[in-house]
Image (cartoon, rainbow, N blue to C red):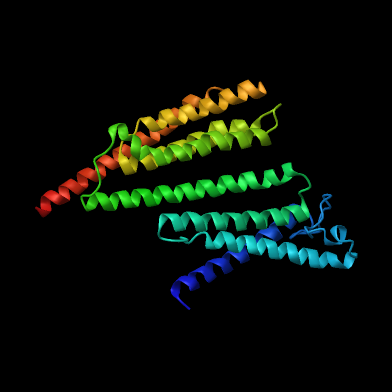
Length: 291
C-alpha cells in the first residue's frame, strides 16, 4: 500500500467515525435519548430513513433504517475526511476531481435528507445551498493559499512580475471570498432569520462580519501589503446585497453594514501591511548581513 493510499484510508476512517459521532449527537439534540437521566420526548423520532413508511415494510425494519442512517452519516464523514487531502497536482485534474467529489458528497447528503426530512424541491435546496456555500468557501480558501505559495516561489526565483497598481491583481482571489461572505452568506442569514426580530442578521452585522472582514484583510495585508481596493470591494458587494433586498423584498437590513465591512477589512489590511513591512525589513537586514 502506497503512502498516499494509506493517508486517504486514515482520513476516511477518521471522518467516518466523526460522522457516526455526529449522528449520535443529532439523536441527542432531537431528544431521542439522554446521556444524563431519562430522555424527554420532544416530538422527534430517531432518524430511521422511513424504510417502513416508504416501502410498506413492517416496524421491524426501523432498526435497519437506523443502521442505514448511521451508514450514510459515516459515508458523508468519510467523504469530508478525504477532502482534507489534495486531490491532484495539476489545475485541470484538480478541478475535475473536486467537482466529482462535490457531486458525490451532495448526492450522499441529499439521499439522507430525502429519506428523512425532505419532501419538496425547496427542502433539497435548503440542504444543497449551505453545503455548496461551505464547499466553495473551503475550495476558494485553499486556492488562495496555493496561489500565494506559487507567487512566493516565483518571486524567490525572480520569475514573478512586479506588484500591480494598488495590488489589484493580488486582491482578486480575496474579492471572490468577499462575494461569498458578503453576498451569499447574508442572503442565507436573511432567509433563515425572523424578519420581525432579525437576531441572526444583527449577530452577523455586529459580530461575524467585522471579525471575518478583519481576518481576511489581515491575511491579504500580511501577504501583499496595503491593498486599498479590497475594502472598497467588500463595501460594494454589501451594497449590491442591500440594494437587491430593498428593491425586491422591501425589507430594511441596515445600511451600516457597508462602513462596518469597509472599516473592518481596512483595519485588518493595515495591520497585515504593517506585519508585511516588518517582515520585508527583517529579510533585507539578513540579505545585507549575508552580502
